[in-house]
Image: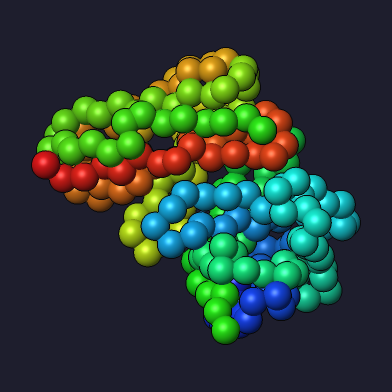
Length: 119
Length: 107
């Protein structure tokens, strides 16, 4: 059973960079795509972007100038960096596995981690 | 961006009821429509993909239909564990977008 676990600071100061890592267990990170999604408190879901195990990326244009997603296959991890954060970036951040091709559903999700942007 | 609009935003129903949630896309998305269930404090979980294909392990009381711009999620015989928020998602065109969610509450 594939499991995903987000990790990283729960508090980030405005204008700094939010950095999160997702560790995949119970399966290899290779041959799949991996994605980040966020959910502001009490609100809906926003897709951030995805990365393939070989490093190909696709970002949401609304965040593209500030987002970098990377992958480390040796550690079975992928990461999210979001720069120049503001209070609007406060959200629960989820990582998920993406079955790209076909209808690209997100079939396995991490439990999510709350990141608060505040001084 | 393709806008996804769900209706209603919330509904109240009783155990055993059948409920239907609508999801409309701002342009045709063929069958590129997925449904997720989210319980409070938990991550979303995949229910249906490709508009009508049930994810493995999901009970058959869940069903999806539609194509183009109009889709529906139906839960027949609502169970206590089905009270949650449901989201549709289009993966026809990047950026992938979600509906605003439909909260299913106990009457």
